Length: 387
Ligand SMILES: Nc1ncnc2c1ncn2[C@@H]1O[C@H](COP(=O)(O)OP(=O)(O)OP(=O)(O)O)[C@@H](O)[C@H]1O
Ligand SMILES: C[C@@](O)(CCO)CC(=O)[O-]
Ligand SMILES: [Mg+2]
Image 1: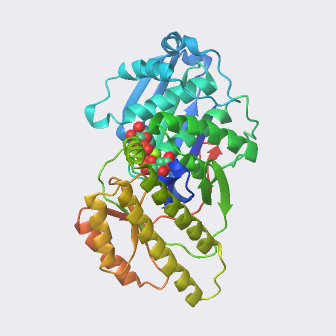
Image 2: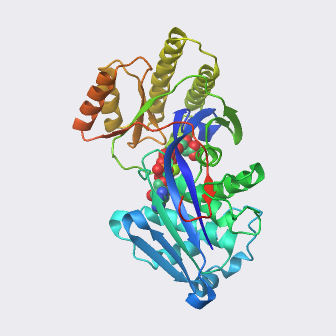
Image 3: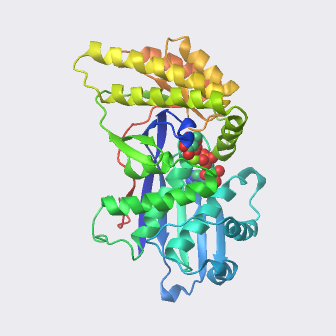
């Protein structure tokens, strides 16, 4: 039996970092996916290993299931229907299993993804041998939610073949989970994100699970219905960064300056709420759309200023801001900051020639540009091998 799952990446339109401290944020899924395939060996395969293949980097990991069971014996039995957190002691035990594979220095950041995999796999499927193959269209560690797309797609595949979920395996093509199953995927994925991020707000796994556009505050999700075309240029500065370290640095700044940072987070909260209102308010003609775009641009600039206050901008991000401003376009970082990706609003009436010129200038700086579809479906699974 084989199942595949795919989960989208995301952009944050407003409120990243501040959302970890209780502010509202607005996020949307994008049409770039992480794919997971999960298959169990048959009896005749005589295989007793759990195998993980990161196909894009051609990195393979495998553990005899007996070895995993011996290392993690203290955890107790698995129950896929009730998501639970990985304790610090278990993280250490998992780390020893990961360290047995000498991950090349260039790929060392993948260790966090492997740890999340081992926790989610053993918690949902126990100690069964299996083969898991992972590929992604998302740039990793760049602010587009690669960690949450990994956790969500993995949990979807693992739950699809568990006792907690009942699905029509004869369905052809991509299939959506029901609401209860989505909630379960989301909760488990959050536990995986905790291993990779340390202190996630949950916005990334939530938007990857449910898709579309969402407003998110302190674990509460509100689905948004967009009433305007939203086109964003995504510029990847290709400066690698790590969400866990950036979130920790904002928390440290908050510890040093609690009152000032509370005001920053409050301002971000107002910006996110205004962004959500603008996106949802009706616009019947070009003038109304242009007015909404002008407001969004201003709010993006304000949000970027506050992200700079939090200490998560970067020289490469500032270069993107300066370059797009030459064309009177507004930009802000998206995701954790510190490098990674920057969003630039492309107004509806902007000519294709200008877009080409901006992209050419950004790419001349060594950056990579893309325009992704915004607000598509969340996680999906597939039981046939052709779709
Ligand atoms: N396709 C993948 N294969 C292997 N590991 C992955 C994959 N996607 C994500 N990861 C893990 O997630 C880590 C990146 O997560 P991180 O949260 O730092 O960045 P991000 O999710 O891309 O950006 P953001 O959190 O700002 O949206 C990688 O270092 C790796 O451990
Ligand atoms: C930086 C952050 O706010 C968003 C990362 O995409 C972290 C989080 O909310 O978990
Ligand atoms: Mg992440």
